[in-house]
Image (cartoon, rainbow, N blue to C red; front, side, top):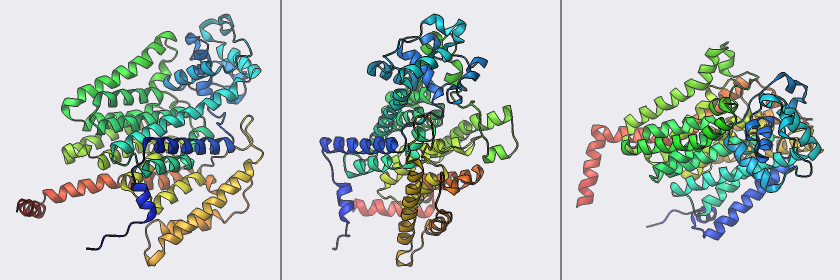
Length: 511
């Protein structure tokens, strides 16, 4: 009997690796990620104000003013340092501890408590003056690199829980994430390391759920909510599909982990952190432009649709999947697919769309591809278009702009043209035309239509609702594939023909 031929690459990817080899692969992927982000300008200052003040106050033990109020006094600060919202507490606690360990800004004395004023009213002004004089801003931004390791750990844990770890797939997956532009966005487009941290904890929690370690799953998912509230979109469906006997342990662990981080911070700040704990940065304002925004909804109705409806949709989908699949809802492929779909609801109902909000969908697309053992052309096209729709290169920013910023944009555009061309040509091989080949060809023409770009790719100027429809819609179709396949398989096995086939299969095995 002839055995099917296996490519050299596939044999290497399936080959088990030693622990040392895996560690080397992690370090190489980390070096690539950190190197690319640094070359493109390093962590951006945009939105960094959401966590900078909290980091500096925690670094110096001034917890009472870790969440200074937003006041008219902050209007006199440069726009990059004007507080509009605060990040949830987990990332400021981590970055504050790291800043203390590394001694950021230690050359200049930190302001005395009396400089912070009554109710911390002048705390942001005092900390801003200190940060500028001590040069602490750049070092604090670079702490954002630490969030990459949380994401990497979560991906590795999930791959190992699904049987794709400790082999070439693990190293290849880490490297693929390191060169994926969507993963750069939370550090380059806007400073949101808390998103990377939250997603890493979500993936770690999902891995624990697949292994049946429900207390650990609840603890990690609860911690994820203290990093960024979109983690609720993963916690709630996991709670729904968990076995009845494990649900109480999962929920209790999540509540304890959330409370252990959030409640002390709220108490020590005299309630100043309450808004950040409950809403995070979700109420910081938006530029609009999404499908939901274009409906004309405003005020409380818009807030409910953007923040509450995604949670209800995630719970409803998980409940329906549990009804249809039962215990099979915890099979790795449909389970991870369900979590990915629920995380995607964040951008389905968003008021404003930015590249960093595509992080979860982009990472889950990569994880599902690694689990399936196949990186498709459609995935490559999606990741490339996401880069072109939201430029990841910060050009001309005060601290992190690079003189080669414009050249980097041109270089990325050249790379994208090459990638799209190769993927499109590969798609047309042997006259087989997959779904991604036609849009791939169109995009090759569209990307090269305006040349040379000066500061931006022209695709980024298209309306947000257009990119939301194209990118989010196609991503949901791709991540939902494994769940849909499992639902069809269960439906087919429950049909009369399926029952007869199962009975015949069991009879043959018995013989």
